[in-house]
Length: 363
Image 1 (cartoon, helix red, strand yellow):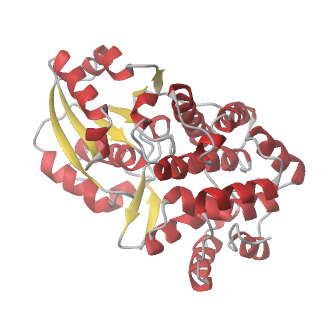
Image 2: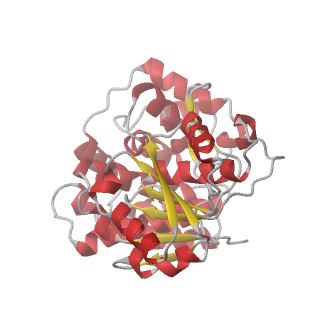
């Protein structure tokens, strides 16, 4: 067994401003990578800007990261800032800006890099130092080396093969205060899927169970927020962020499994938000898992069983009418991937996979 999590995590109120000195240790010029709106509204960009100015660190900003960022966006940033002598990169936002920041940090370190470089294990994986400031409670990208990018040439999402772990993760629940309820729900279901898939995984070990079990217990404390029965206060916002971070630590060790793999084409082809797309396939995946472990994990997350979990998904997402043709596309994408078919901790063949792709409306 091994546990590799090289990110130094700071999780506290006013985290970014409190750790400006850590930013200074990474260099004299930073590139901030973020999306087009939320980081400017929730205060995260202003906090990073203030911390950089406090330490007299020069910075530039790339704020053109879209939802489900594409490799095209990554290389556009690389081209624009190639000659700027950037020392380190700061990703602010949800999984999209943080994942894009990882790839941009690699491309800036290797100006000659092309698309093949991102997906060729023989290429140099080194990157500029990276800091991540999460503002959603989903991906846990602030503590993983994974960068999931949209490949328009293949009409799907794919993980970059190189691992780019941040040097620092600066976590502050206050950035979630202005998030919409839909964003919180989608993000949190994504985090839940990370926790479940990391354990129901062929690479699971006791260290993964340690972080995932802790994350599930914390996630359970916020379930009533997701159903709208409770308003999120400071404590709940911190729990949301912390459970996502623990989920990130979990998948950094064992990875995700079949629900995530199935979700990518659904997001690409039908623009279904990532958390909702993954949630669609989770019940079928859990139903195929060993009953004792399934019930243990669902119990930790605050559910009485699989039917209770299905009811929760219907409550937060409503019904999802996915055409059979679309489910077949997802089915074929995973069926042909031997690695993904073997990623679960239990046996999955074509028959079991076909039941999983029926979605959470199936009984």
